[in-house]
Amino acid sequence: MRILLVEDDHHLANTMLDMLRDDQNTVDWLDDGQQAVNALTSEHFDLAILDLTLPRLDGLDVLKATRKHGVQTPVIILTARAGLDEKLDGLDAGADDYLTKPFAMAELKARIRAVTRRGISAPQNGLTVGALLLNPESGQLTRGDEVITLPRSEFQILHYLMRHPDQVATRRRLEEQLYGWDQGAESNALEVHIHHLRRRVGKATIRTIRGVGYLLDSQAAGVPECP
Image 1 (tube, one colour):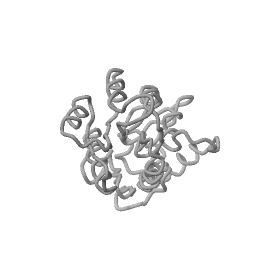
Image 2: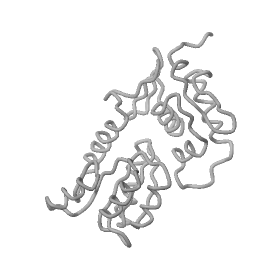
Image 3: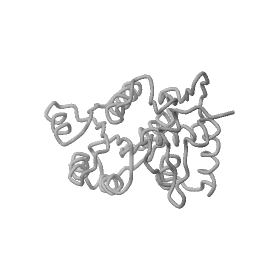
Image 4: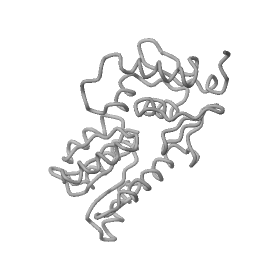
């Protein structure tokens, strides 16, 4: 899952980055409200964690602007503003959840799971396409009697493809899931990860759409490969 963290407390943000990345997430970080609007309206994120007190543009205005642009990315507000009126303002502006500081990281992670489950309508024990069952919490893939703990990069790709079965995922979109704004990945890294995934889920399950990207074939995902 690709998460945008918008937080101007650098010490807190660095702590959160480490903890969120430990859970198979790609996390991008901004500390400026206007930059957050630009990012949310131009790129794809599965979730945004948004502080309210930000330079240049208040977090509530960030939320209002992104919703006005039609952006439906789930948003969890994370702020020191604990008043009831402020909570109601945040939820009325389009936030999916509201958590006040100080907070326990375990609670934030639980709220992330709850918000993202609503968005993908996945059963609580995992995401299912055909014979494939992917558990986002453990990073494990079950196919028939085989259970595999996926490396982080393979998990990120498969998680995205299984959330959007039978839809073409562009190379750029999959690379965003892997690296966010980080640079330096080898040019063939995505192909290598896809190659390894095909060995796990079946070659026909992940189709190459030449010149565009890849597609997870839900019908092929339910058919065992011939030996």
